[in-house]
Length: 367
Image (cartoon, rainbow, N blue to C red):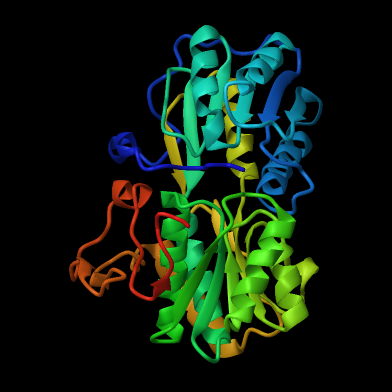
């Protein structure tokens, strides 16, 4: 669905982790008195209960905050590829002055349109290209993934955890690695078996992948998918489950542990306000738990207090900066030391991650 990030992201290493970079000198503010027209482009449906729902919650927050000062619109189920440029062009022609695209596969079209329309502001989720009127934004979900991994580690009895994974790209690989390291923190020696679906949103395929993992003996399961279908399979088998993208507890409350969630609304609100104020600037924003861009969903009733306390302590350490999950020594799948003692992986290291940590069962190149 999203193809949210890929390996060739070295450009991010030198960018400040904020939404302030080079100024958009070629862009202009909306006409005084008229509502600012703002558009979102979704690769999936607002009803996916995951990635797109989280973005649309952010859009609704913008509407609630600004009221009649904004006019929002969205295009959903837009396929990635060259055709998206037609969608963007129509949004520009409709008078939208700020356009958010929420899938990596939209990036080339966004970049092309930004060059064609210097008087429009463009924002690309999970990309790396920037122009004077094109910014990029994403967040450190790997920190929350580590905490969900701790919940899985506390839940598993046999040490066998499953993970339903979309595509073998750095974003997903670092997610799986963070989950594994977190699980091993509370269950030393735990393994995480990966089942690739090669889709972001296909509930039937996701459920089938989860069922396959459960049949192979996992007794706790996580996911990097957009739907709660993994939870459906977990509920049927009585297997504990962590979700992703949004709080999906309602779909399988009896087996729910927690999940990684994104809070897009405050960022969207700030960026809309910046356009209104004439202070919008380009750059690359990488949100964190410290600024509440990423977090974990509420715990399920089956998470014991001891696990909650351990997770909350680690969450506080992540927010303060006293802990970072990708600090060595860390071994890779072969048992070789990949990150030496005391070494901390850089932002560029994790954005280009193409290897699995020790304990992951699966191929980082996919299957």
